[in-house]
Image: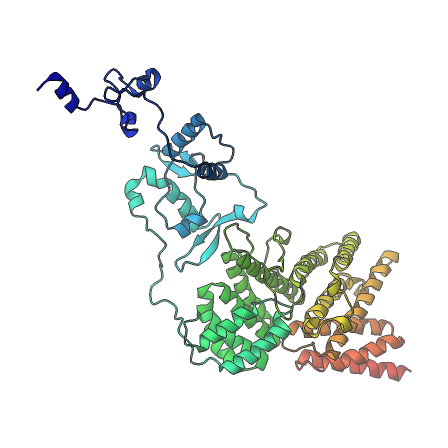
Length: 566
């Protein structure tokens, strides 16, 4: 065999990068750098070592560049900068093999967040974050039931997730033991989702749901009407529904029909409802609290509400994230503000501590753009959330231990007036111009507004130590708001939108009556006050509990004393 033939049958040597590019170089090139620098020609084809052509369109390149700049803002797209960045990526610890759902909840850690300890291994450090943001307090992590929950920074789940992000590179054997997902540490069978044979019939459920949506849900959002009726259809269609959904349906029937039987059946499920810890659990517990309020079990209702608040915080209803759908964000925000409003009024009624300690100024208001209801006017949820913030400030102002914090009260009164002035026209028009389906929600919003002003200024009516022109002005504001509260209540009664299904209707009536009672005792000769007492007395008779019956007796005795003096 000739030398030329043997040389043709033997492949020439080449460097690794040239083989990857499928470009052969002569033996004279001892390294890739020399080959790239000297542009050695291939001994076979006699072609120069040039950069290969990649089939990448301009659009594809721009998309890839946009992705790089999104996840690594500020990184130049030059070759040297990208090489440096890739070398840092290769030196950093890799992500553990977590499921996609889990990986979305915990942000990837970079090398700077790990600090060396004994043995040269890496452990997670604490990165400085904005303490004003709720997200700086923890992370969203899925639990054993695949329920996304918000865990505080001190929780075991967050600590474990941070450690897991750093052990893969340093402890490969330990990393192999990490499960691909979370698992249930509880023993026994999972909670049953089978249809409950003790549910009320479908006709009863739908009838009570219509009343619930008309009188309760329109002023205090619990869930959307579509979701409620869909739950009833599934529960009676032998589909699997959660225990919380079954309990919620039974409690709605118990609340509207005053049915103790279905209340007892739902009460037996409450342990499973709390264990479930879902949004449906919150909704069921809220209806449970409203039922117990109706039965004058205010302390028990307050304790029950605390469970709903803790579940809501565990689900992160107060935390806004970018990876959730707009519809779900709207639902959870409206439900969170309903819990806040109920918690605030419980604090006012019972004088207890707040269950929600989150700064409400950091929580966004619902937008009302995606979720509507036939009995809830546009912008109602947004205006209601703003009013709840003002109620929170009112309770804080009343709890301050000062002899007279008049300046803070005056400032808050101006903010309340500003809230009323900023309302859209359809929420401030006369009752005669309001559509019947929106009448209750609109009038109830006004009722809350006037009651908050009375709550803020009533100490100037009760406490004789406050004197002076400023104190007299605040007392006049209290009396004027009390008159408007009575007028709103009477208007609601005349238009048949006052109800005994929602306990706070009766609460506002009796507290309004107490203020009126003090006023007429101080000024028994007033004919206008006497007329208001007569009207409010007839209104209180529609509520069957003993407290309102006693209030009626008090008004009767006051009127008798006034007539006797004359």
